[in-house]
Amino acid sequence: MKTLTPAEEDIMKILWSLGESNVAAIIETMPEPKPAYNTVSTIIRILENKEFVDHRKQGRGYIYFPIVSQTTYTESSASKLVHNYFKGSFKSMVSFFMEQEKLTISELEDVLKEIQKNKKS
Image (cartoon, rainbow, N blue to C red; front, side, top):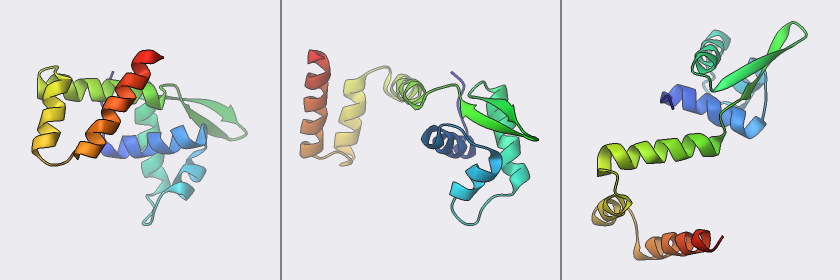
């Protein structure tokens, strides 16, 4: 799966939350200072070329919608992170965050509970 730039991810997060939208509505949900219409429109076209977004015609404009789910993208990104920086080892990644004190024992216990819960499902 192709990687998204931070600006592309911002637009995708909005589309994932809205489900579908035109450019103007996407801009409305963005924080100040709001980007120019042409900027957002260009990013949407890039996302279409990367096959993350598609559109349908509505009146004189277009409605855009994600064709890659947030879950699919998140799984792909997490997998790339583990593979590229931790030699494919989830254990190495967790150890790294523990050493950097970015993960508390309580948080680690929560992660273990989630793993156990998912194993039972």
